[in-house]
Image 1: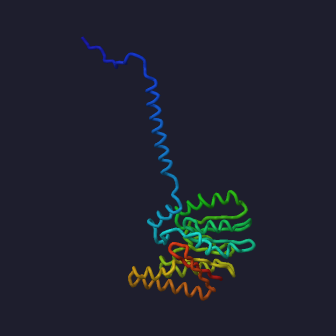
Image 2: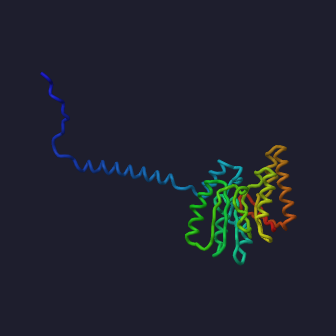
Image 3: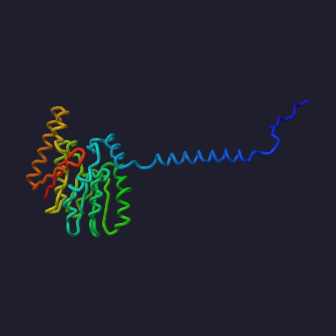
Length: 254
């Protein structure tokens, strides 16, 4: 005789609805906490965090241990902030934007700011945290970001710049590239325009102690490029102790 099919036993008696609601609430709370944790982990890094991440990934193009200080930013932008009348500005190698903030504050209706950044992560951060918010509240000033190496940026047809602020780590580059970039930047200036760049105080002496003969030769050549530029273009130097490490802002006039 065939056996009867097995059936699941349903416990008799009333269901404890309070326990069910408690279990459901715990599961929902856990899911919400997990989603919240994911959201917190996906928040963008702070300015310092984003900077240090790129130092580790690409020291050649970052070239520093800490972002530039407000004191160095003021020195680098001193002339353009005092400018009277419309102006066209260029920033090269802004990183996380310590100089960009001061340049944006100087813009008035009709002014232009072009920014060239080779690092896509820095470029995205600049766009999201500084540039887009600025455009929303200052629609009459033109701000454009070029995610590119300066050698490849489409800037020649803009009519020249009144001021260029450059944050590139020249002491990390081969001397021929240093000469080429400086030549390009000076040619992008209007007559009477100013180029500001910086380097760390005694940087070549410090780096020379830890590199070989070939490295010291390159550093010496880069130093000579700077000396020639200062003689040709009425170079002015300003020591900024408030930066880490202390830095020298250099201004050249075309």
